[in-house]
Length: 264
Image 1 (cartoon, rainbow, N blue to C red):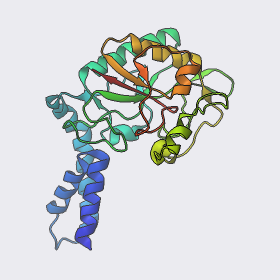
Image 2 (image 1 turned 45 degrees about the vertical axis):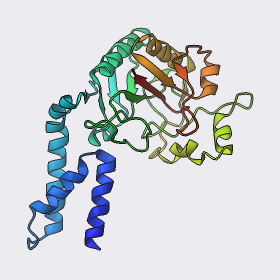
Image 3 (image 1 turned 90 degrees about the vertical axis):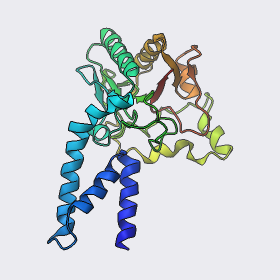
C-alpha cells in the first residue's frame, strides 16, 4: 500500500508541476529507510528541493528547450502565485515579446490596467500535457484574463475567481448559447472549469466589454498571433470580425471566462 501511495503521489505531482514527481522520488531515495522521522524528513527535503529547483534552477535550464518564464513587470503579472509555483508560466520567446508589446499598448490606453495571465506552459518537452488544457504543450499558448469593472463601474485589475477560471460572462437569452449546444451533443466537460475557481472573489465586478475588446484588437495586430479563442456570443457582442478570433470547438472548455492565444 505504501508503494502504491508513493506512485500515486509521484504521478499526481508530475501531472501538476512536470518536475514534482522526479523531485519527490529523489527525496524518498535521499532519506534512509531506518532514519528517525523519515516521513517528516522526506517532506522537508522535497519542499526545500522543489522550491530551489523551481525558482533557481529551472529558469536557467528552460531556454535550452526554447522556453522562458513569462517576463513580469509593472504591466504584466500572473493572476496567482500558484501559476509560478507549479511551473505553468513558461512560453516561447516570441510569445513573451507579444505579451510585452500588448501590455504597453493596453496601459497606454487604460493607465494602470495590467495584462493578467493565467496558465501558460511547462518549461520542458513538447507534447507534455498541461492538464486540464488540451493544447498548452509547446510553449506557444497562454491564457489571459478578461478586463473587469469594479462595483462602481471603474476599470480594475481584480478578477472574479482565485484561479481566474470558472466565472463566466454568460450569454443573454437573445444570444447563441454555445455551452448548451455542446453539452447537448454529449460534450459534458464543456463547462467543467466552473469547478476550478478555487473560490469566487470580488463578486461585485463585471466584464468590461470595451476594455476587453481593446485588448483583443491589440492582440490581433500582432502578426505572429495565429489564433485567439473566446466564446462565440462574446465575439458577436463585441462586434469582433477578425478571422484570428474563432471558436475553439466543443472538445475544449468554454471561453467566456478567459482569452486563449497562440502563436504560429
